[in-house]
Amino acid sequence: MRTEETGHAVVVGAGVAGMLTAHVLGQRFSRVTVVERDACPDGPPAFRAGVPQSRHVHVLWSRGLTALEHLLPGVVADLEAAGGTVIEAPAHMRWLSAADWFSGVRGSHYLSISRERLEATLRGRILARPTITLTDRHEVTGLVAGRSAGRVGGVRLRERGKGGQESTARAGLVVVAAGRGSRSGQWLSELGYRAPVTERIDAHLGYASRYYRRPPAGAHRWKAVYVQGNPDVPRGGVLVPVDGERWLVTLIGQGDQQPPVEADAWLAFAASLRSPELAQALTGTEPLSDPVAFRATANEWTHFERAERWPSGLLVVGDALCRFNPVYGHGMTVAALQAQTIARRISSQEPEGAAARAAELQKAVAKCLRAAWAIATGEDSRYPSTDGPAPNRLDRMQQRYLARVLAAANTDPVVSEAFFAVLSLNRRPETLLTPRIMARVSRRR
Ligand SMILES: Cc1cc2nc3c(=O)[nH]c(=O)nc-3n(C[C@H](O)[C@H](O)[C@H](O)COP(=O)(O)OP(=O)(O)OC[C@H]3O[C@@H](n4cnc5c(N)ncnc54)[C@H](O)[C@@H]3O)c2cc1C
Image (cartoon, rainbow, N blue to C red; front, side, top):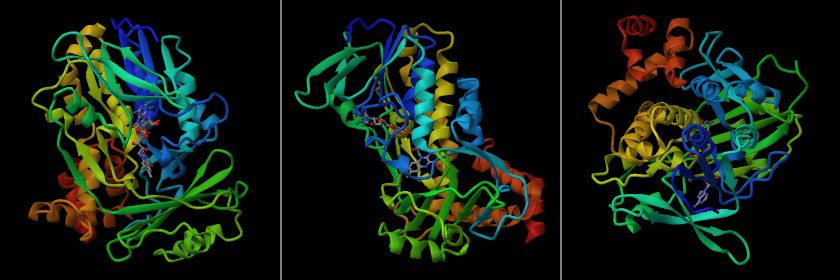
């Protein structure tokens, strides 16, 4: 690896956040290196250990799709051609909300595709640019101080496998997009900075998912099924189509209601949801994999943006910055919004200027996640078993109001449209408090 740093950016992690950030940095930096711990071979998409969540349902809400299309024109058509399905929600679905079934109302839309296929498509597009390279099978082990005080000047990395050769990559900007297990707080401490505080709200949600062979088109009138849990029955399940003519089915449980991974028990769990429709859809359908579990689903926001002292040349994005309870499906959309924000902020800057303004950039990317954080933590703190600060009176009032919004959204097309605009991150949560929506919600009552 070359060592001159001017105009060189290093991105740690080749997940969705890392690849999209590399893409936008590639528009200003003369060279971008993405360092990834896993092997990312060309060819058909494959599971990799660094993204264990890829075996569970991943939907990309409309706001994320719009952002993706803006960053990489034509990519949505590529994703559909690769087997992805755009689904109108709730119109193309059977969706039992925490209140009731959605009935023929309009909402928003999302893309359903396997996470592996999504990543492979993004990698193919982004690495086609000669200035962006992927150094896979290399693990970043820490940050390197810059040549002057108050700067990060690169990363230390170790080749994976036998020998594990160590090296240094010097760079003007390091972006950490290393996901849920990121050690960026510790890396900062090693450079003499105070480790930031992590806010944590854990609803103790567990996932267990498996693939099925998708029945031929026309076998069902719906494209997807979602049976949500509620505080009385904290068990749910979601079935979506993914590439390879498959269904991906994720069962979800909270607290002591975790979905099991033994095949028979998993099916029994599916049959125990608030509606039998999801389990009925699986009857006579061929499973293609055994169930696998995912349990680390807490909302965790590491507040890098609040640091009193922040080095230039360092940025933390994606799950390395904030992890959401995945049930709301917001992480990838937030990653795309952060990439758009970085693109906007550095569009008129030289690489040196972008690196020098890292503290401002860090604050700007943190803003992108506020709405998703408010939705996830507001909902999660409704459950008594959730760990985290107890909701105050105002929170409880908001939760009661939102429960009524949801009930109204089941049948009222105006409230439904407003509700899904918020859920898909197209509009801010406050837009549910306009007089028009409030009047319709109270009329429904
Ligand atoms: C079960 C589950 C379901 C989800 N469902 C949805 C959904 O429906 N919709 C949605 O929008 N979001 C969903 N998410 C969130 C989504 O997965 C993430 O928000 C999104 O992938 C952005 O993650 P990222 O790129 O920051 O990290 P990741 O995707 O986790 O990627 C991090 C990458 O960094 C690499 N890495 C880590 N450490 C190092 C290191 N030291 N050196 C080099 N490389 C390293 C890893 O190998 C990995 O490739 C879900 C999450 C979970 C857990």
